[in-house]
Image: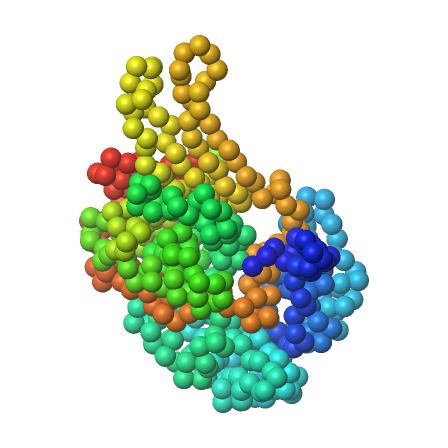
Length: 509
């Protein structure tokens, strides 16, 4: 899980050991939905970055499958434009696309036009990929996941040889509730083996998310404190400033809960709360994550806040409320905000609440995990002008900045004992030289080399849905929907959720 984009040159450790990542095996990267937005904005730039880092074998090729009227030449022109757009968006100095890398990629890009459910489409894919290694990326709407895998099986495209692999990367949403997630897992496993399925969550491609385990398990001073004896509570925040934009049709049937909690938020919770795995092998890590999710206590209505944004001001501009967005039902009960209180019934975390919140049109774009440690006794400072000690908080920043902040008390200079709050901050951008990244590079590369650590297993997916299924069972209720002004910290009911426990959220803005 090293930062594979940070350096394309060998890194040699003590004793002359080479720690540089190896090249991927030769093979084809077949993208269903190869003409879509996800492919253009994220997948192609990620593959380009891997090529820049020298991590792709000379036998690597891209096959885009879609229904649009395209040919190889037109697709290559579209790819070039996508890479130029990515370079302009990600780099202030507008570094152009590297011509040497583009000349290497260009002849390796092929296009297959066809319907995702037509047998001929898969015959055309077979004609290109032959018997070589293949990764099939399903960058399509969720309704196509099952049919595509069925057709891959019928065409013999997922049959592995003695020295060749066939793997399938499945995008989210993986199901819309527990029953549909189980049904989709059952359908995929009818054609594929579990080790062939890579259920992707792009949050896990972020360096800071991966660093959660490194922080906990490679530093001797963190792990002894990481338990109910020392931690008061944990806050997980995934806040956005954007509204539904052009996704009203999708969001009306999805909402904040389905969109964010069973996948992104649950992965952050599991990585924060998991026990130390016996190794960093994929199944060892995923076993511990699933144990955490299985230990979550069943939710009660008092543990949940559903919210929806009303008109307000974001970034100095007036914005409409959710019900005023194009394509949204003017009486919609769909939530754009969720706050929840989870309890984990195991020896490490019993009595330590995990508060999570996620929403759109909030005061700032921010994803972070805040570990709130228990306060020290005040008795030592009873004769000083100290009203309260600065809370000891460790914040793991995931986006938009990546890093870690520690907050604690220190004596203010002077003859009397006065305490002030101070912070120590580690920022990834200041310490490590990183190239432009989409967040997909690590995930794609890991699939190429067969490392499934950052991908979800069937039981992991189902455990995440099981934790939130009670909320889905309650259904949408106008009485439980709390409104909040766009650009605010969220609904007042979310503040009350913590206030009942004599706690409060960290500020988003």
